[in-house]
Amino acid sequence: MSILIKNGRVVTASESYIADVYTEGEKIVAIGKDLNYQADKIIDATDKLVFPGGIDPHVHLDMPFMGTYSSDDYETGTRAALHGGTTMVIDFILQTQGDTLHNALKTWQEKSKKAIGDYSYHMAVTDFNDDVAKEVVQMIEDEGISSFKTFMAYKGALMIDDGQMVQLMKVVKKHGGLVTVHATNGDMIDSLIAKNRALGNMSPLYHYLSQPEVTEAEASARFADMLHYTDCPGYIVHMTCEGALNAVRKATQRNQKVFVETCTQYLVLDASLYKNDFEGAKWVMSPPLREKKDQVALWSGINQGLVQVVGTDHCPFMWEQKKMGKDDFSKIPNGHPAIEHRMELLFSEGVNKGKISLTKYVEVASTNAAKIFGMYPRKGTIAIGSDADIVIFDPNKEHTISVETHHMNCDYSGYEGFNLKGKTETVILRGQVAIENEDCLLKAGHGEFIKRGKTSKTVI
Ligand code: URP
Ligand code: ZN
Ligand code: ZN
Ligand code: ZN
Image 1 (cartoon, rainbow, N blue to C red):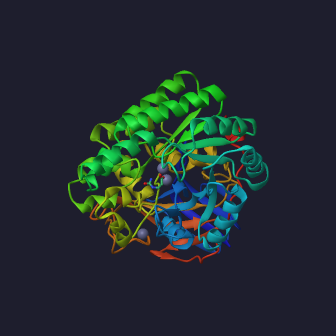
Image 2 (image 1 turned 120 degrees about the horizontal axis):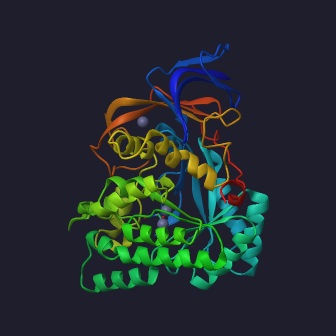
């Protein structure tokens, strides 16, 4: 299959220019003015943007969590991602405490056979010892899994203690990988949850009030200090607030490598959505939505280069699942549906409203994730030799988000009625048309596991 994309504005993390792009097989083969190839398919991209497929490095597909499973699996989740212009996701494998990383890997390899879009995994280490240390090395050297997720919260299920954290960092540093973290103070949050429950404060509002900014700022600073002590590179997922960002700013003054991801919801939604009724369950996620001043800090953090990546933390649950916590906020499964809307929300709220530039948009939606997670330049850019993962985007098309039209397997939207300017039109994945005229043309099983290299080879 060959495709010739004519006259679009090609945007990368560093440039924006009018050109044609020609793909053959799975790769980009030529970029230039007035290309004259006999292609199987020609796409007129006049007045459209042509940028690299989005990479969402934070999704939870078919994940066992809080007594249930997230409602998008690899097929529905990667299809919805493609509809929104995200051609690759990185999902989280969860080690069961007391069990091996390899057993967890087998479980996720089975789940991901039906992926439509490309994918990789972060390995979540929930229990660390000498045997697991050997497995960590095998993951990096043999399996192409170079990032290790840790939780400083969710005690009893996912959390590791600081001693395990430091030992893990030492092994990962030695072998060129990256430690990523859910940085919130689990003990502090658990005690606030217990206090609110004892007082009979059971609505979703108290989910928010049990995770104040300090719980995230403290854990982010502690994580940065442990990275400093071990000289390990690190990545903080789903950062929401000014206090946590200041901890990273301080770490960068010591010339540390601490990468930061925020998520679309923290940039565009705020805590005024939590009222004293059950509606707020739509946005029960951890950390919770924050304040307007935190949105300002995050957008500035993107422009200052302190925040490198915008993901989603997509972790959808049906309304019936959310109702598991209708009498107790601590039983509401944490997470919300977002995988489909990341690129369009970030474009509409960020680029169209003048908060970030077009090149910055590509950088945080695709390129930086490819670099930090060891896939660049195969993924994350429009260049000769790169995978032909391409989005053709109409920057002027207006549309409205609704559960009626979204493709995620979730029966509500946390963005219902949100008006957007800018829409994904055509999506190409490794040289094949994936999305055209609102239809997904690829089938379950098309998605490929992308073996990743070491972070130390690409950015450090
Ligand atoms: O609420 C969230 N974030 N759910 C998914 C698990 C996690 O902490 O990322
Ligand atoms: Zn769509
Ligand atoms: Zn998390
Ligand atoms: Zn998450």
